[in-house]
Length: 69
Image (cartoon, rainbow, N blue to C red; front, side, top):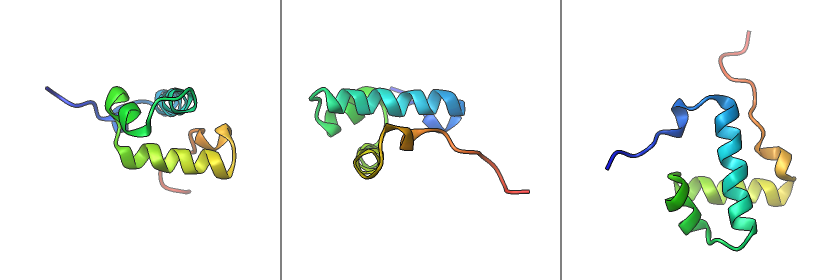
């Protein structure tokens, strides 16, 4: 089975994926199960969870990509 590579998604799609995973965790899904379901790493889910706990859901927004000018 081929795994998905979220790095190849657009920035908006990555942001939507992060928000969907966090909504699932907030609604009672365990982080490890959410990681398996959405095809992301457990480490990423715990990192996003910590970011949301320290800030808010807007901390999951996509940031500017690429090398600075």
